[in-house]
Image (cartoon, rainbow, N blue to C red; front, side, top):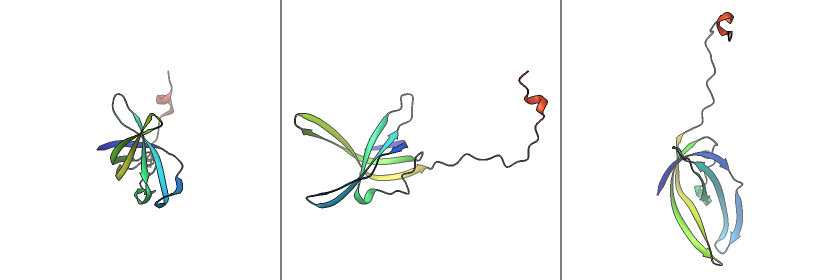
Length: 110
C-alpha cells in the first residue's frame, strides 16, 4: 500500500534487544490532505530509518504494510514502512529581497 502525507511529528526512537539481536524503531506521525485530513502513526524499523528524510514539514510518499495481531483478546494494528521518499521538503519562507518603498498614507486603515 502507499500513502502521501506530511510529516507532523517525530516520536522518540525506541531501541531494545530481542531474540534476533538489537533493534530500533522510529514512529512518525503524518497527516493526509483533503477535506477530512487524517493523522496516522507509521513505524520505521532498523536501517530503513533515514534521519535526512524525516524533517517536520516534509511531504513523504510512504510504501507500507499493515498487520494486525491479537494480544490477550485485544487487536493491535501496526503500519510498517518499507520505503519512504521525500516528495516536497519544507522550505523556509522566502524573504523580501526587493527594495520596495511603501506610501505610508496608503497603508492606513481609513
